[in-house]
Image 1 (cartoon, rainbow, N blue to C red):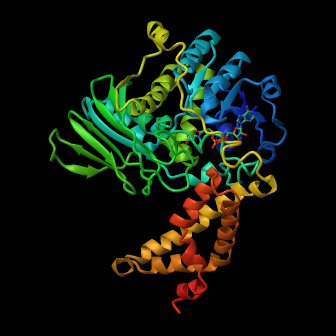
Image 2 (image 1 turned 180 degrees about the horizontal axis):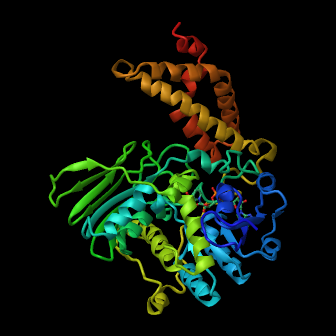
Image 3 (image 1 turned 45 degrees about the vertical axis):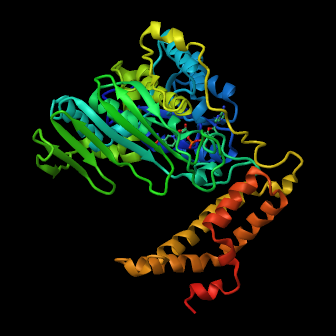
Length: 498
Ligand SMILES: NC(=O)c1ccc[n+]([C@@H]2O[C@H](COP(=O)([O-])OP(=O)(O)OC[C@H]3O[C@@H](n4cnc5c(N)ncnc54)[C@H](O)[C@@H]3O)[C@@H](O)[C@H]2O)c1
């Protein structure tokens, strides 16, 4: 048996991966961290095939019962986001340690159940919240612990990620099946729920936990998203969170026309910020106009190994902490209590927004007394009917079965048009005009496919004009895709500048 290059232990951990979409990101890192990937489980045949190619000799099944009955030590849980609480409890009941993808659970009641299931089991439970463990965040944590920044006053962290096509495809880009359905949760889940990649780093760096949250509904939504009410995908999701030291953070999630991951921390002695496309800058010296300088965190050998894996090294570190706790008992940063701390503000922010901004408590589930109030609290966003919501039940499925492919194509091609059309409006102001001509060439090269996808979308819209499926297609085709202009006979010549 090979000695691990990371842990001074020959002990191997037999790992099963449940959910082979996101789960596939971890295959390569496992070997160096004492994990042997021995089993995989996913409903999707194409994902099981990919899993077996990457892990020859492993066991693969679509059946969770059969998967959990296999003889292995730990599960990397990457099933549907709202299912993690229940799925984690099934893993614990089967005697497996659990590394759960974010978020940890979907309701407060599930949170209480999960905490108590972990306590009863004596097994290791970690949340795979990875964003606190990039080199910059780890450096800030070290300096924060050393007292360089003082106490947390305020933070602004965000996870603004426009992922419209993921409402209609799997993570590997294939359209969702059956083709007249949409993604099980990405198509409707309110972005407040996905709060951990921005809140998590603030908690870890500053050593605080959230205690209260407040939010307002933003009514404006991007084209091509299904939910239309106050809750749901397609909009912006900012919340204000009170932290346990009395500091406040603004946590920003959602989809907009400007993806960004700006991270800013203000302490009572110093501040730090990471802006889009820039490295880390610190302002040190105790006043608002003290020197502000760029710094470059030094890296050790483990950092370099981590950086060669996904998500800026974060994926490596969550696996590392999980293995370390199983092998040596040393606690990981995201145990089940921290997992609850980082998950609950998302649930409570949706509630606060729907209650006109009323502040909501973030209970500390370490405290058995605080659990009682939430033990039966099953409040959750109403899910969209992802299987039957798009088209009338009597619809011709040979036709509506083309929806997810049509929508995935339409998103791609309508955005090619939109970027060219909008940048053309400021053509004379561009510093680098060559970029506009690249956009024009990309659109011209794809024009036959653009038009084909527009025609397929129009056929579905005309067949079921009042349906939700028609609405999202229409938004992309007309608002984004400029259907009339693109299909006009002279458009190809217009693009060629004739
Ligand atoms: N930390 C990160 O950077 C990061 C990145 C991507 C995704 N994620 C998280 O990972 C999780 C999975 O992400 P994804 O993009 O693969 O999402 P997904 O929801 O598309 O994939 C879940 C997969 O699990 C399978 N599955 C679900 N329940 C199952 C069951 N009971 N039996 C068998 N198979 C089942 C599905 O077939 C699907 O392939 C999500 O919760 C997501 O939030 C985290």
